[in-house]
Length: 145
Image (cartoon, rainbow, N blue to C red; front, top):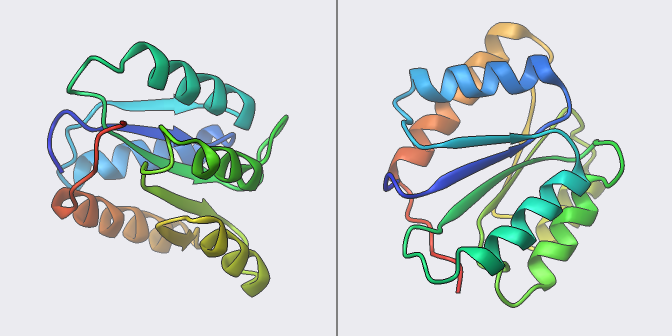
């Protein structure tokens, strides 16, 4: 992933957010990580960013999106992002503790790029995030139109 990509981490659990940031960095990610604590804050950031950073070539975003968040849940954020003509190309990786097959299917139907279940076990969670970091090192992220 190129350095100009901003990783937006929408995660209400501070402990999970810290683990995700720390282990992405350990896997080699040096990109800016913006941590947002609920769905409304995430939408405010994304929609403001798409309007104010339009002229900037360095406006690629990758969204790591928790589903269970206060104010606005991750599925609603995903719907809004994928229905917006300027934001719909943002890769969205759902990160959640639930592995309900209906929820996984809903997220994919709405346009998420990937769906990662947070393991309950600490070591497995750390390993999953490091693997995510390695994946992020090699993907290309489109800029916001």
